[in-house]
Each structure stands twice: as C-alpha cells, then as structure tokens.
Image (tube, rainbow, N blue to C red; front, side):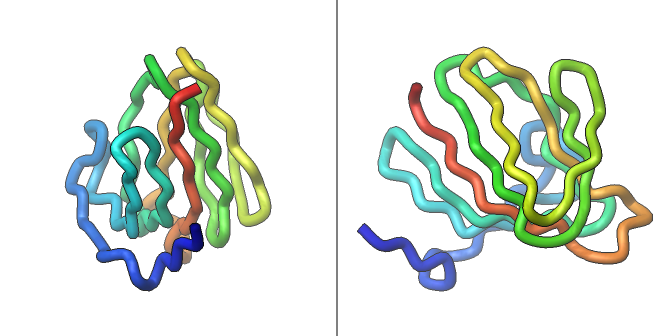
Length: 111
C-alpha cells in the first residue's frame, strides 16, 4: 500500500491529548494503526500521554521542538527519530518563540 499524505484529508485537532492550540494532521487509520503527517505551529503542542497499548515512532521533517519523555525535556530537530515504547509517556511541543512550524511523520502501532 502506498499512502500519499497530500491525498489524505487534513484534520485539525484542537488541544490534542490536552495540548496547546492544535495539531493539524493528514491521518490514515486502518482500525488498529495510525500513520500521519503532523504540523504544530509555534506555541502548539501535543499533551502528555501514555502509550498503554501502542508504541510510536516520530520522524522530524522540519523545524525544531521539545520532546518531553518520562519527565525529561530534549530538543529535537529535522532528521531526528523519536521512539516511544509501549507503556512510555511523552509529549511534543513547538516553542512559542520558534521561527517555523514543526512538521513530523508519525506511526502509532500496536506492539
């Protein structure tokens, strides 16, 4: 199967997982797994959440951001791959003083 993000409708998810502003995403969901391209504008975030029954891989495409993982903050940038294992807790934010959107590709799958 080939997924073309530009052919997947863009959804706007306000306060996603309790975050600030909104997550804009081209999201594919097959009933079990999610594959999406996400965009966080400056000041937007995905709230802190735990992957109880899934894991997540995030590849940063452009921009910079801050990953909160198990209570510790890490700066992330284009080219970084972020992994949250099953049972892990994390969030992602684009700082309000950022100069550009944080764009990433993510896969959330049952593991």
